[in-house]
Length: 209
Image (cartoon, rainbow, N blue to C red; front, side):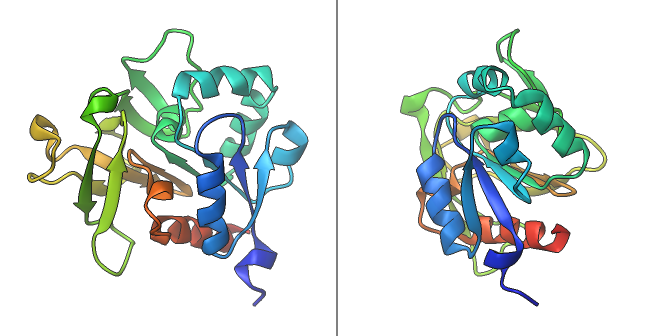
């Protein structure tokens, strides 16, 4: 079997957000990585990462760069995708506390609350047990993070915040989910130096490619 780097071409949506950080982590995880800004670039990848950033800005830029409908089409066709923080918001079928003009990709049967953990000053870190990730707890960074309020029948819950986090009343909220080949986290695994979440996604892409 060929190495993952030869099998799987993983794009990072390069319109706004943590593009460089995700790119570095995917390289560490063994993937061939390319930025995606145009429909032609989207057509060439086997998987896609939607980075952390600002979900409203990313939503508008997807429309401005004529990527919104092509991305929806590829998601319906089974394109593996991983969204962190703002990426999770974009992937959800419904967003609470979002803007009325915000576009949704409707790739995850979840209801997400935008900026649920609070403002920038309410950012926090926590160690999480993440289903499918071996080697102990994942250290997670939450920055103006969403959480998942409701999941559909086909959605697997991978992680919740614990009772001992800085999130206070947000303990036990859902912060990582998977539905088929779609993975999403409320937190930013691209910021910690731990590439296990990215390796999980690279394996998913490799299995489909």
